[in-house]
Figure 1 (spheres, rainbow, N blue to C red):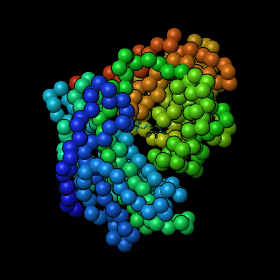
Figure 2 (tube, rainbow, N blue to C red):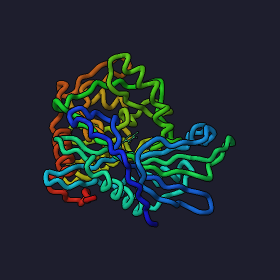
Figure 3 (spheres, rainbow, N blue to C red):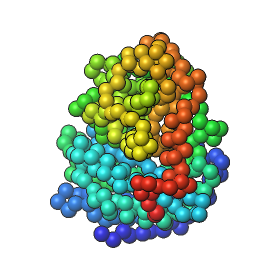
Figure 4 (cartoon, protein in one colour):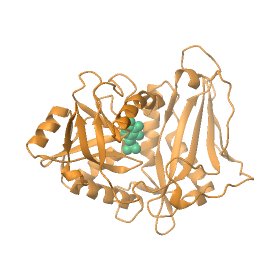
Length: 353
Ligand SMILES: *Cc1c(COP(=O)(O)O)cnc(C)c1O
């Protein structure tokens, strides 16, 4: 399929690279492709970024058939632009498609389209230390119809925008509230799909935690509320003695690409990593015994987010004196090093656009 390109006649001024923040600015162009039952995916195009008009009856507004991805393009010291494991994002997008009855996309074509879009907006990839171009592919159901069934039409859209360094003043460990009332997902639900609905489900607990002075929520399993699932919108790791533990992908946990990359790096370094069930009780016991060394979240936005404090049923514990742990720092340095091509990339994770 050939991708038609319509260039904008009104290129926007680039934002101040020191004041980017996250999710505030969008590049000049976007990619759109349509799906029609019987015809498949068609009409791929790169067009000026801007409003799209839909009928108020389209299905995504009512029944939430919406999935997305999140990845970044990085500008290297040599001025090149690279992506980190985009094949994994497109594979996961298709897994989300399957769960939400959305027709699959061609992964290789999607990567090709993404690279072409980035090349069109290459000047939007910032070069300031720690900045990147955030990429948001998503698919929505577009049938103007009010019955509950999978839509017969969809749009696959990719938008991008420059984002700032996540940690401007060094990495500060965050305070985490262990949520024992609300749950994010249950096994058999949408937890392992990157579905918009999971975010809608998470807002209330996040609001409660914020009011109590916490940055993020630690999610427990939806049935017994005993076992750890994720932290905020990140996967979670605990360093207990010489073992690194992360919850196994049980069906309600989102299979993060940063999670997978951390596991692969740790094993490459000869560190013991266990993907298994881990309860809050085990974590607090390990802390009592002085064996809980570090905990951190993993995700594309922050890469590594160290946990400085946990509050579970009003019992508070401080981890590693509230400072970033050794392994967290090493993972952060190596992952960001690979992403910006500053250190060797032993697994060929990085690809040029
Ligand atoms: C996207 C996401 C993650 C992190 O995935 P990465 O691929 O590492 O960015 C973790 N948990 C949830 C709920 C997510 O939506």
